[in-house]
Image (cartoon, rainbow, N blue to C red; front, side, top):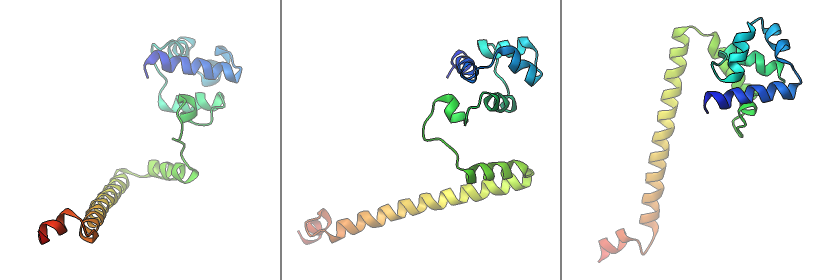
Amino acid sequence: MNKIEFANLLVTARNKAGLKPIQVYTHLKVPQSTFSSWETGISQPDGNTLIKLLTMYKVGSLSEFLGEENTEFSTEEFTIIENYRKLGCDGKKMIRIIIDAELDRMDKNKTSTFTMDFTKSLCNTENSALTNFAVG
């Protein structure tokens, strides 16, 4: 998505909320020129400001704002993200290590499960290439 498309989404969300630009930039305490630059695609709001905008515009989620489907976070996922943000550098590093280790474990299980299932299917089929090769 380019800056103009993003800006158009901001304008559309504001209009759906029934707000005028002056109401928004006054509430956010940002200069009119800054707000205007967001809605024209010259610049974009930072993450915290975007959250404030979406809240003002009564947009339920970033996914809804972007028009994406099936990317909603559950309450548990939001809580995990909030707690992660509270951690210091060491805590965040530990979480990344745990996630990486778990993903590696899952990948290894998928590979070994696939290999075992594939091997079983070859060995248990009477007319399999392995059986024919061994017999023939």
